[in-house]
Image 1 (tube, each protein chain N blue to C red):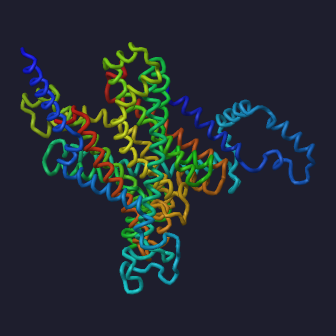
Image 2: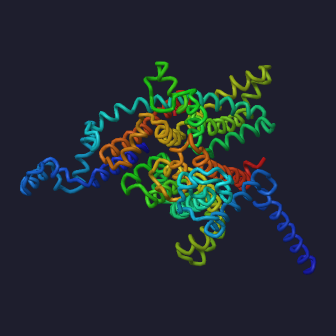
Image 3: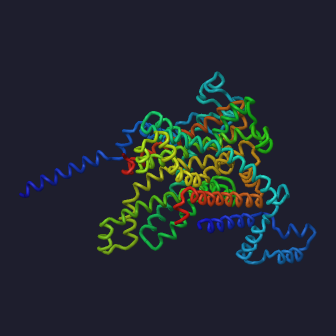
Length: 303
Length: 301
């Protein structure tokens, strides 16, 4: 529901970006030897004389056909560039989530179980530090002490993740990106688990003699994870921000690095396409989380 | 009951109320929590240092001295450089002080403007019930969208540099403040003095400004302080990407990015600005958590 106006807003930004391109598309396609009359004819043919809102409609039509224009620097089509960079970004995010989420849930569970003890305070202190940590600092330290010492590669992507060279090259970026994600997940898990640990069904489980850990994991944690999944969905935007910085630092050939590169080099068509795909990706993930949420909690699907 | 006894009783009541107020004072709670008190003290020092940077900084942040490139802290070549010199022989301590000034200043300006707009949206949404749904829907849209994408989009449209950075940070601080302001205003709207104000014939403007805003602003202000930590982190990330402050501006994020090229030669050139950002944001977050606990009685137990 919410994503439709956002999508329109993003499309509008993309369209405006193409409007600020310093070169006039009609002059370019007419060629250097064209007379003013030729340029005007082409302008008429391309519809550039029509009101902006009609041109905007045309732009939306082209986007729906995946025609995002051509990069001003590489002269390849923007859709092609995006197709090349999309998978590395997905790969990096998966490599980050696969270790950061379980670790966060584990730490959060430990903190909730040992509530008020030193363990709890320590884990919560770690979590606050994680939230305050600039992603680029983690990356710089890893590049300097692990990459610089020659233990792991830190420049670019050496292949798909299932090859050993590709796997090695994703380790450092994934650690960097995950480091800022563990804290929030641990914190959410703790809050949510503390709530469920006080619930009646947990007391019932205890009363029937289930062991302490069994109660925590089978009865409380399963229910506590439902809000955690939603919150992870909300944090995807945060993750996206981290991945843009991480990709830039590690020369990882993803969408985020492409977007930053396109903006700093004023490659407007490419910047427009990259921002569009990042926004659409974000909304797709949110939708996926909503679906997952209904799956985890059947009450929602029924309602 | 005699007049005198009655007066005595009201005086006793007032003293009791004053005692309870004192016990519950927010700052008192903060002081009782050592990490929060430490964070508050640290922030006061940092803000003072940032404001006084031109007075207390030992050198000029932009004067280069190629003979002192990467001079280690307090070594024989540059005994007065407490944190050493950077890749262009500029004093690191001076640049950190000016960097704090820029980073905190950008964050503060953005949060003041964005938070002000957000507060206005929240108050209006709470006051005019009919506007509540559309305004809050708009806020939800803003909130659901990743802050960094705003940064990218705005940098793409208005170009890289400080104006775009401030604009992006402004936009991202609107929605959360709007939500907080609406929540605070809704509980104030329930109070009888709002009705009394309307009964004596005050206009909407006076009601919103003199009754509603004045009772909400402490909460709003505290959340704006909280937002500052997030704004600083985001601003530093955008500057690090080269979309915000540009070198040679002394700004912590752009200093960190600038020093990245000399990581193997002198890691401290980029590590010190990173550590400064971390400590400032950490202090804001620790203090923010404590303030939230102190303000929200539900979480207090």
